[in-house]
Length: 392
Image (cartoon, rainbow, N blue to C red; front, side):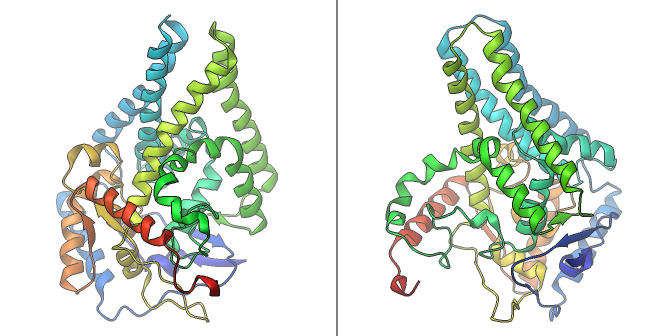
């Protein structure tokens, strides 16, 4: 088992007090450059630390985040209470499941995400509680932390290591992926598949990931007891199905298949929202998808790698920033994952100025619309048969 300390890939970030170790084993060793010739990250880190010190504010969430969390939970769960207690036409019930999907995505981006990054609160138990909200979203804490905190945040946009750019064989997100004839049509069918993300969590993904991660001894923190993790997974999945499917079937005078349709619509709504927002940050033309050399070496340090592989969108759109949990400020999130998203708007100016000062990229699209168009264009490009396809 390979043990990396925080400094091994976060370049001794000291903008947050918590120190941790990440244990993981990969199929091939990936090594980021340890030489920061321009001292970019050291300079940026100092500026961000100064910002928090001079303004005397914590790097975790505050009342703004706690208020927003309450709103997101209300949007997510209040429609369910109405569905179970009020007699309404079927079209209204269906509309409420769409609202639940919007709330589901909102809880995931604003509550679960910050909680499992340890940034929702300065109190560990609060972060653990908020992070555990993933269980009512159909996910699993252990799997999410490995897939997101370890693999995605470390090996961003590196094929074979970052699972966020791995959609199996049906969608080609990287020029390094094998091209198939079906990819010619991905520009048409991608949006239909995006909606399936969270329902795949509920049905198969968590079981596949847990088997894989435990076998590879991947972990965020001390490697857990496999029996404990499998027990948590099975118990929470049973509870999830009871809460969202069995109880509504028993409580409503409605055919079981109608309940399943509502369940699917909720997930599909959340899936489209979450997947589109995730893809706009990394699978767009202005981001790189570098590959290590034959020895596993990458040319950039971890922090500089994040600048090349990550993009912001709609940075000045207050609603997008509020609803997406700051995920439209992905550059800031990737360089400072242990700072709550409520601070990204403020530190974005510092990050951008410092990147430009050192002649490094700072990718962003001014609007969500432009980012979506560029994502579509990239899917179209990647769906075109490459000249070297026969060699793949």
